[in-house]
Image (cartoon, rainbow, N blue to C red; front, side):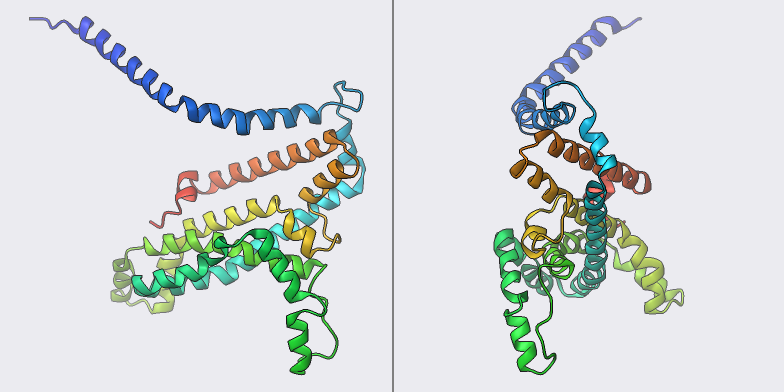
Amino acid sequence: MSHPAGPNAAGLRRDALVERLTLFSLSGPALLLVTMTMLVPVGWLFWLSFLDDAGGFSLEHYRRMLVQPSYGRAFRITFEISFITTAICILLGYPLAYVLSQLPRRAANICMIAVMLPFWTSLLVRTYAWLVLLQRQGVINTWGIKLGLWDTPLALVHNLNGTLIGMVHIMLPFLVLPVYASMRAIDQDYLKAAANLGASPTRAFWLVFLPLSLPGLIAGALMVFILCLGFYVTPAVLGGGKITMVANRIATDIELFFNWGAASSLGVVLFVLTGMILYLASRIVRLDRLLGGGGA
């Protein structure tokens, strides 16, 4: 006896279509918001980058970036500072996250409040606080001279040193949080098994714990690096105009020269480079593990 597969299949397809339409209608407001706040501005940015001063289509802004050394210098400084900041955050953040992951959960949660405390203060306020601490007559130089650690004020601000100090302070929690989550997700039975097989604590860390925590470390490092590429406030305040990153160059093109085309082309190039970095990272480690910071 044959079953009426035709009507049932048609009904299933109809139900699936209704379900997809329902999901689309529910997500419609969110899609509209993303389109208006992200896709439209980015599309407008791309469009402006291909217009000359007369409003015609031109590649002049991109050609200028290849000809004028100042643009290449801005990109070089941006990537150098981003890389150095990420490296320092790894050196400081990974041991801190490891110590927190070995504490009892209640004590670790209390310590995590201190890690997240900077999020409760405006980035601009934190940057100017570092300016007060690091300037020639600031707290650090004053105490250092009084304690006899050095005789003359150190140049801690309005240079690369001050910029790195401020950016590391701001970016450090973005690395600690995913690394800590990745370490907490590691099953301690793996380390016990390594010890039962004769591995010392140091060897168990390098061969078992570190590889399992790498997804969280890569996720945190990638997040820090990407965020550093677009930094503006900290280099502008602590760099004192001597540190010109891409975001600062974009602001200069708009505020001083009112050249939206040049600023847009810089934004487009930085956007494309950021996308390429994310793509290469996804080829090395699955992007869902990067975003989730999974440990196992």
